[in-house]
Length: 337
Ligand code: TRP
Image (cartoon, rainbow, N blue to C red):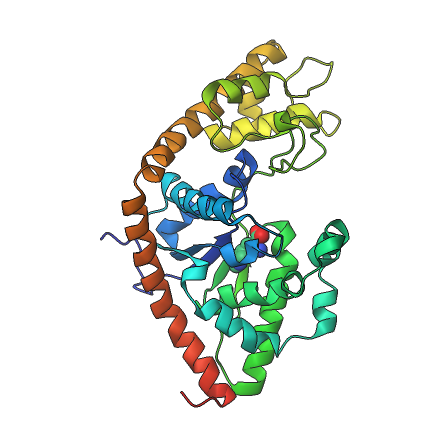
């Protein structure tokens, strides 16, 4: 295997996870997943489907099972390579839930109460404020700390959870000696913040009631182009980035993320052209990007045996890493193993 690591230092490790809750959007792809693929060259990467986290809200078993398969197939389809990275399904590695118990006994009720996501979600699902929703950041801390990563790429909404994982690691190490590496957040050099096509002041979201607001990573070509045609713009008819033009600025950001062109180059490319031409160009390039991913996804999802082989191998590799940390933590606490 070629290695452009001239100093011969082992590669730094990066870890991230994604929940299997519905097909990710173009925003998830350009903001996070595309970067996971790029990171494979520079880092020793560990990526998981966070399916244990999914049941903090009630799930239908058959649907959850399908979504776990689909999420795994999608990670392969975007170009995550099981030869380069460890790709696995969280629930298949029991150490996540096991370490979570140790960590939960080293996490304060008060600090979990301050998590903004808990406050939001418990307000939105007032009928199901379960203990798992409350301890979710502890499970996330074990996802991270088990693998001793140097970096964790997370979006703004998960920053606070990474912070608490770091606090737990520092506290645990302070009591028992060095057990966990304290990871840094990883901020990608390029990472687009993609907004809704219908309300460009809001982040693009798969739970948007208006399906024209988001592009699903598995939308077909015609759907993608149609959604871009309907994207909200403004009445100036000039393709340029400006705070008072959030719709057009968002489309320029998307076009820039998929083509690699700069904003200035894009403004020049569409000088004197109307929004019709511009939106069509954005729609077509996004479709060109997602078409091969969708085709690859269809091949993986149709081959259950192959998928199964890959996720079982991934879980074996993950567990080998996770066990080391878990045993060390258990012994330090005083358990007899
Ligand atoms: N909570 C994260 C989310 O909803 C997913 C996640 C679970 C995660 N475990 C993680 C992300 C560990 C980074 C590292 O997006």
